[in-house]
Length: 280
Image (cartoon, rainbow, N blue to C red; front, top):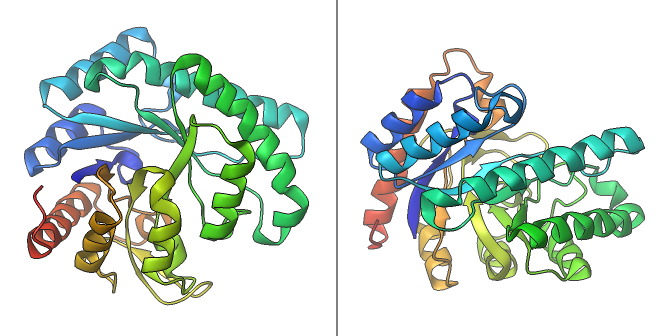
């Protein structure tokens, strides 16, 4: 397994600074967020900037395993959903361009949207929309990775895997963020067993409390068992990137420093690799 970092936690940090800083800390991969509100928002990336960023990532010997394009796939309004599709297809096209970094396109990450209580009513619609996106991904040789999320229509592993099977496309896989299951009381072994066979990317956080009275935190601030997690993931056969992602919940707290968060995350998680007797 390899250790990367998501710029989700660095929305205003210039990408030049973020790339150099993360490489200097020892991370071997970077996930770049392209959502509106981030300095690397898709709308700001013309062809020259895309090429420049790819060059910087290669210059610093980083892999680029994923693009964060998280959005809502269950808007009722046709115009809003059409914009979602347009945005995700544009992110797929960016992934094709950025394949030059690691010799394969980064996976494109999204969330499902909706609410847990809508699962039975909307799982068919979600599968239909994901099937369309998977076809667009297949046409480009890209993978779209769906992230189950607390408070969303897919909030538990069994529902997530059920929808994945409904779509039945190798171009739709999972981004496995175990924190969403942990705060719901789902045992680590259960979520890993169900999710890892389909997972092409991961997020991790720290956490405390139980949903809905939980907090997502920077690694080292909560109760998450990183050593146990890494050993369980290794035993399940996962070989991809382990990626700290600092939640908006934590970013909103006073005094949040994105560079300090990346440093602390590296210190905590790299030590967990060593304690788990796993090579970085």
